[in-house]
Length: 158
Image (tube, rainbow, N blue to C red; front, side, top):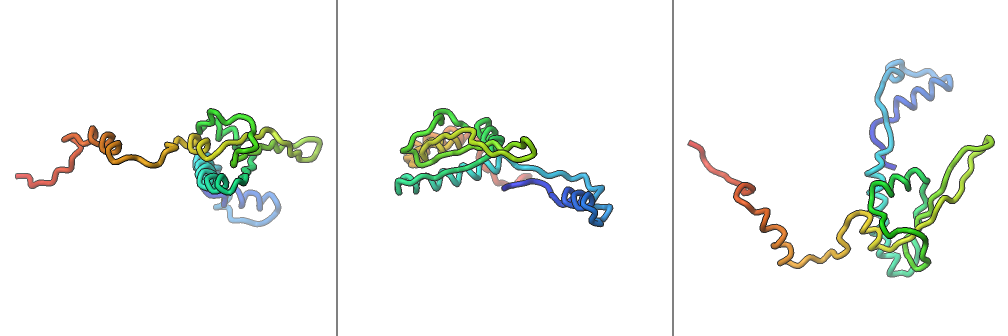
């Protein structure tokens, strides 16, 4: 997974708690670390998008198994409109699990399942489902941005 920061200070604090001698400099280090949620999710969704097209052609299923907090973050930060329930014909399936502590043991339980196709994953990412853009369409989009103020000017000043 994609993290930011360094885990070294936390590692050293853990070792100290376990009775291992560590440098006091490491223990005083206040740097933190954590999940770069947005980058992790974007990377997962982009990989799912690329692979889903292949799985569609092969008539196979691609299953992403994730924990509930990651899925909830995914739904908040990306467009999951229209991705509800499971359709067996969909090539992309997402299985979401709860991982909770209870009665002195860890419990894993299925929270939800959803499915979609490559167009649904493209929609999540905000990609245009049609990758082919005609030259005239491109010119029509770019021409209004080619105003005098945006043009590069190279010249000599007196």
